[in-house]
Image (tube, rainbow, N blue to C red; front, side):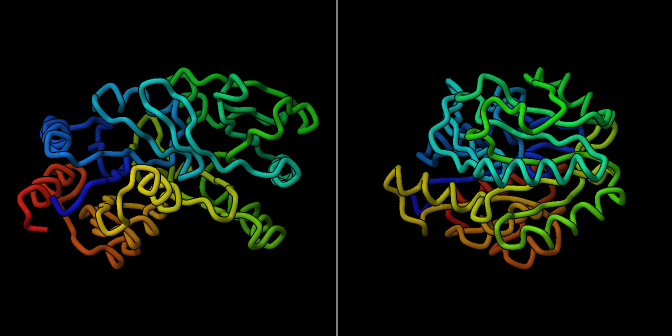
Length: 287
């Protein structure tokens, strides 16, 4: 077969509007593996936030999490690769977020720290944050100041959550203050009522070279797979690089215009089994 490694985004791509993996998609993933196509989930979520999806998609061995900052083994949760932020940088970003009146969320390499998020500041969490942490049984520590961070070397992402307009000022401040020393993303979050397109927004800060494609490419190299033998399916801002750079880049029909423009092919939307349709074309040799 022409392709050997397939990366699939989760939210807005693999999951439908109700946050489920359709039976057609489950069967297509199984068929892909039977034909020797290794499937990797590539998501902005942390590993702990993917447990329900992994339960719905048995047999997947690798997960690219936190927008490309972590590569994990799904059977054990073991961190295979990571891109941690320098402690000084993560603490300066967290301090700026707190000083703008928000709760700073420091995502940790949980295999090293023993928990998932360090929450810094005295602000109350956004209701969607509380819902999300409870739903995924996320392990957290809560402190009032960055100097109380017990594992400063193990932060892979710094962020916060609020209503979108409220984050504009701090987003611009961070971009002006840190420039090319960070990679900054600001986008719609999943809430109890909306899987995509909500007014609640995420602000996420990473090392500047972090993206899904960089980690996917490294995994391909580890597995001895050429880059032209890779496929990626996605829909959002953090899928642009991986869809553009993979041997075959596929956008679901509901993808943002930026993703649609760089994709080689377009499949049906996430709510119409777009992943299953794309896999069918790949396995049948049409794409």
